[in-house]
Length: 461
Image (tube, rainbow, N blue to C red; front, side):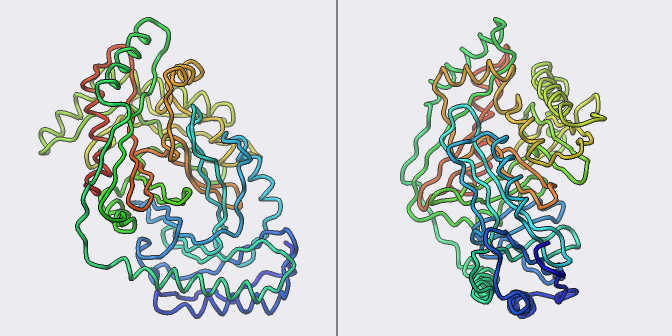
């Protein structure tokens, strides 16, 4: 600790959208006790609040939203206390090293849950989006029945009172500005739509990839498609997020700043969740559509479980995840048979893989071992990435990369950026992919990507 004693002025306080006086008072007390901030240190003041007094996270005005609805776990951030540049590097191992450097300067003050940083990086095969790591200036977070407001700043030797006023203004805008998202729904029209590659070209790629797998050149490769849309008016991102949280409670739903826009996603695939020394990675591969009624749905789920093609594709992912975790964890365990994860439009084969991470490693160290899995690249990894590079596949908007959060203790969660879109004003770019093995049928794979597109298209078109 840089400071002589933690501040505990806000224990048991309540916060509501219409009243943020307690948090403001905590910031002012902090500033009066420590008039200047040490140069170069990242300082986070953690103020506990009553979770029942917080509004719905999609009604908080922030530029970062991360939510796991079924777990009642979410965070909304605004501004940047620290933004770690990528220096042109996109690999997760690079971000892990940058986080280590950041954590060595990070001081936490207050009795509440630890502060967190957010991160995102692209798929490694010819990606065009930068890797980023940042700590919000103001963060409102909840995990079950524990909630807090975290105020962060990197010290520049200037007066703390100036920073405290900035925190107060930011928090006012976050908690009171969300009311503007309740405006009446306005019709939106698609003015232009394009697909890359075109469906016929993409199906030809599927045929070539399936032939390569059948011929023993690859075990699996994942091909992706892109849909670009232009609308008659700007996309209402807060409204989209409310719909995604309501429709996909078992997914990780997030909206993260990306250039002049946002990456929005409802991802079913948690790449890694770390709490203490326990790590869980969710192997997800093998897909079928949902049925229109319970009977049809059950038949489709049974067919998915019985499909040799889908089970083979899933087994590749499970084996690769278990092998990668074994590089950094002990006691690797997973069920012999997958389960079915039902979502709104699709159902997937799903196997959690768990282990105990070795001392000294944090979440980003785990992610660096896992990414990219066969679920987004293929197998063997090197051969699949070379194949994708040779055919000129490019993925942007962090699609099939990884996004997540990590706290000052090194715990956190990371999700693969799937069922996602890059939203910029009146434009949206959506991505979807499919795993190709030797007996893949182009028409079926095209239909699978169309259903994956529908996760966000049904909110846009």
